[in-house]
Image 1: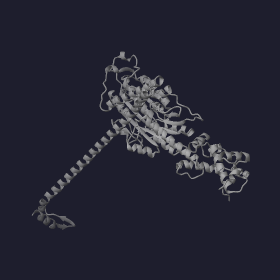
Image 2: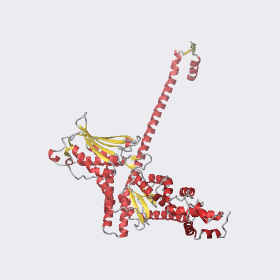
Image 3: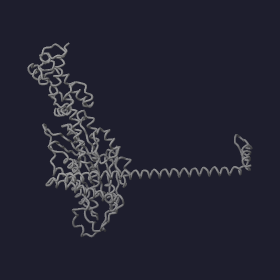
Image 4: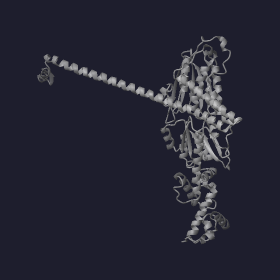
Length: 592
């Protein structure tokens, strides 16, 4: 009945001045339907809002789970390098039964890496909710400006070793306050080390102390660098416990230092914030209260010289180990040993790798940075490269890409060492042009065998080419990039083959490289220096002329840019075993 009444109500509407006017008596029939429609709409809106909230919650949970996963993966990677050094050197000591200075150096390296593991464990306690006790006797009263300047001076040596200038600045020479020396030193060393990692050689880092102008009971400490900066998307999360730094495809590294810094600042009843612009630099600002109620004046006599936690000390000790205990070999022009270039910034790892290769057979050169490795390789191309894939700035994959894009270096095999052992990491290394990929902790025998087999493969390739004609098609014997280089060299020699003044130096200039670079590249690929290779191409050209044309020996020599017939005959016999005249008379030599 109600349905019929509703239809009757609609049909009985009166059209007046183009508007429909409903009878008041029928409005009561419409109300239930309007209420039902409104209730359905409200229910739908509530369900939609609940669904959106549920999706946002799921997204937050997924993001949190992803951060946790990345964090613990990064944590595992941080532990791999010290474990690799400890296991490797321990095994080496057991196998070699070494005593004396070498054994002492290895034990010191093991102890250093054990302290680094302990440091990582201490940081994990902070990240997972560990609260540091606030002992009253740890607080001191004194001039905070003088103390911070002392901390800056202690960091100055390390920054200079990295080629970065550290500048301390304060408008005031004295700000008296209660402070915690141990916490402040830890905070500043962590932030300064972070700034140093982001800075390029030749840049500056500023440590600034200033009293708040609006609030005289507050002072601010700033650490300013002009390095690569922090990605805008990652900036809000740098102090999160499970934040992992992974900017522009770089290897993720756990940022426990920033988490620890924030935790220690909170223990000092202060706050920390960060401002950063990618490519321009980063500023960390710490705001702390000026307090005069924590300790008595008697505790302000002197600042403590030793703090319980000092990551910088371990870093400096690790950096100095190679200088103290292992002389880095130098390059000699006629050194018969195979040259290995190692790019590794952790010198304890470099020390361990040095123990794997016999010095009588290998000349192992160590550099800490990608640009230094590339520069050294351009001057003296090595036989093989071992590169760390987890260096703080440009890593082994960046070096591998540089080598593969260089006509001078693209034939050199590269072995990547990395704390990351996932399939995606291995695929990325292979795509970058790596010949082998070893994940830490690796066995020393595995690395040594990889290097030996790669060098054997290159030497076999060189021997095969030595037996081939210099202008023959040898696609199956040489990689295409090496073949292109040899073709380029051969084409230049053929172009200048009649020029008696043409020399290896002119060939090197034509190829835009030094003579030593050219000789080492040709030695690596063809097994001959440039002077011998030029003569080989000329003799091959002479053989073609003698086999195809009736020309006098003097004319053939002139075609090869040699105007001394006797010299030409001696060189020809040296290369072919017969004189030019005898070669013309050999059976099977066709002449046009």
